[in-house]
Length: 35
Image (cartoon, rainbow, N blue to C red; front, side):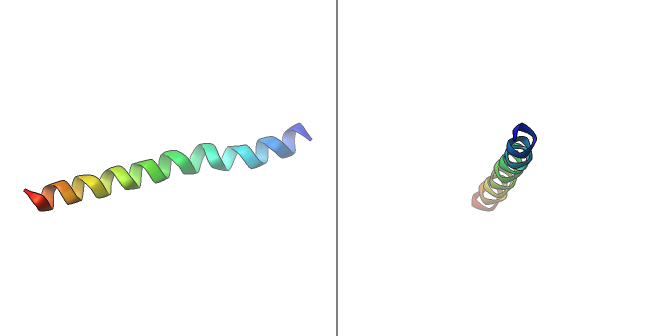
């Protein structure tokens, strides 16, 4: 059961930083457009 839980939790660990990275890059693009 532990391996099953790890399989579910691992994608979250990898997807959350990915989402944060895309949001961060979008905010940089928006900031550059504002300037």
